[in-house]
Image (cartoon, rainbow, N blue to C red):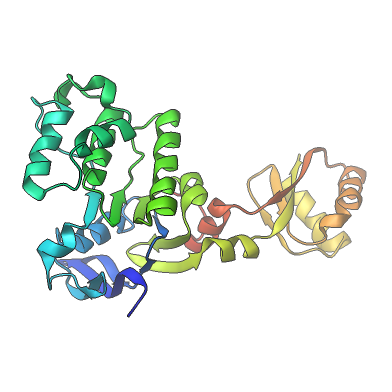
Length: 307
């Protein structure tokens, strides 16, 4: 039996002449947090909708809890909590009233499930306010509360921190980590906020234009990340000529018109700095750094920031 709670094989979705998801094969292990990364339009939301049977695949297979996702749909989806895109509730009802309707429709495991979920997302103080009066952040919090109140084995969350302030992001991040580490909940989370995924994910899958470019363990990724020296200089073009012609160093990248990163000969930073200055290049900063997830992502998709 596979240890993957969610597994797809060559999952594809095509709308007429446009392929939204192409031969996607992801593997989400039990009790782990899987971060699905990609720019807007990369196919993340469509993938999650297919997993939740909200969109029918054009081809490929989906296995959830080691079974075909359509074999026992009622049994399967009762064990899943989800937040896809902007949550929708009855505008004229309070958060509590909206969750009571959901609880009657799908059942719940504990009597205090609604109060518990609202307290987790920080909405227990505004129980008398109707959903139509909620801010974007409050609406997102209620969507997360709806996803977790029946204590699912799996959470599928599409951009769950959209609209949250920094404190709210911190609280939700800690709760997701607690769910995973203490309850063994499996979490599939999509985001374009790389710093957040980097802090919580055990595994990441990078999507671009509907395709999975890479699927990797975060520990392995951190081992692969290289240290580099970043120089802020007055003339990047002239600095690269000095690196190549005078020092024979070629393992560098140009960040922009003032910053250059050297990935080899890090211990020679003082020598390189002196050489720059001797050749009329002003050096404003010299910092030793390590590649982050954003660097990794940018290299995969050919440059540019996610978003």
